[in-house]
Amino acid sequence: MLFRKMDHLVGLDIGSSFIKVAEIGTSKKGNILKNFGVAQVSPGTIVEGRVADMDGLANTIRTLFKTHKIKEKNVAISTGGHSVVIKTINTAKVPENELQATIYSEAEQYIPYDIDDVNIDYQILGESDFSPDQMNVLLVAVKKDLVAEYIDLITLAGLTPKIIDVDTFALQNIYETLPGGDPEQVILLVDVGASKTSLNILKGAISLMMRDNVSGTNQILDELSDTVGISIEAAQNMLLGGKASQKEATALAEISRNTANAWCSEICDVVHTFQSSSNELKVEKIILSGGGGYVEGLSQNLQSELDIEVVAINPFDGLILDAKKFPASFVAKAGLQAPIALGLALRRVDDK
Ligand SMILES: Nc1ncnc2c1ncn2[C@@H]1O[C@H](COP(=O)(O)OP(=O)(O)OP(=O)(O)O)[C@@H](O)[C@H]1O
Ligand SMILES: [Mg+2]
Image 1 (cartoon, rainbow, N blue to C red):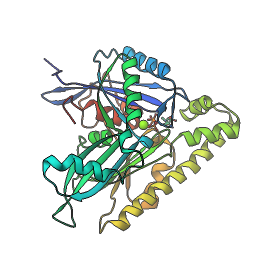
Image 2: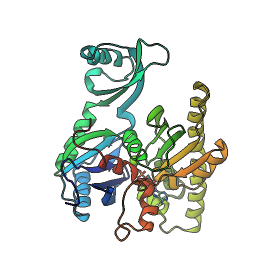
Image 3: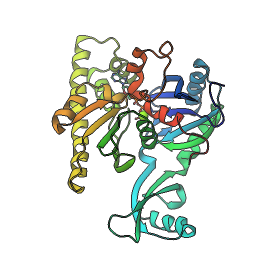
Image 4: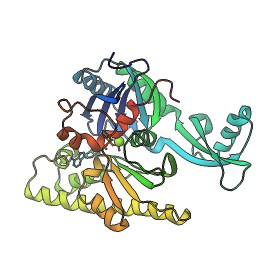
């Protein structure tokens, strides 16, 4: 058999402007990309991470699966933004049977929500640098009502949610499959989406700093729509390369340039904060993803401000691709928007 099915999941990245779906099979030679597709989401369908139009969105997902002839029903999805809190905390080492109670009682002070309103997950990262009696724990809290909303959505689309991951972790998951990574190098993964940006500074597989903010291409769409008096849909079409008058094209170029400058300052602030708080460690490379990575100026500005290498992610680099089904033009077009769905598609049912 070509693909070992068993625990195989479909990765579904429900972005607020584009849904991405990915299916990856395994073979003796490695992971094979079986399917990849995107569908545009109408403005107002997902607002501040919450689903405002359940039926519309479920329909979009159903159509996306149909178009790409995806039969598998078990999916891995992810959440991010406002309703997810990720923190590395420091706590006393305790015996295994006391771990959960200790972490839950510690968690309260780090989470801006009532502890009863969140699902908590954690991972022990290792001994603290400061004391052998202490350990570092990665704490993840997601609002229960958000999880329930996404489970309802997936169920309404006729699918079964098997894993609910976090966007940043799914991105890190695909990054770790890419060839040529240097485990000693400190790198920054930046995903600029429509409604949010997530930053993750990594050394090898260890995350040293994570930050989320609300910057994204919606800022460009809002301003373009106000400045030239067009709808958000029309602004989105223009940003995606659709027709524009001379006046609209000039406005789009200027707004994009200013927005990319603002993103660049925010990202540089995070890099500087990290570097001033960590002895000797320096971010050596930035890997860009998300549709915001296409906005002209972002990559060049970062490169010249920080004087480090900035590259666009090629999330397909660690996968086997059939060149007939997925030609180079596909890789170039889908690359920036694909990584989270691919990282999710690599999850297995028994993953935590
Ligand atoms: N080729 C392109 N040129 C310019 N902008 C683009 C291009 N492709 C996509 N974008 C813009 O990037 C935006 C963000 O894409 P992405 O798929 O990363 O967002 P998302 O995952 O839906 O958002 P979020 O994660 O914030 O919910 C799109 O809404 C679009 O405006
Ligand atoms: Mg996204």
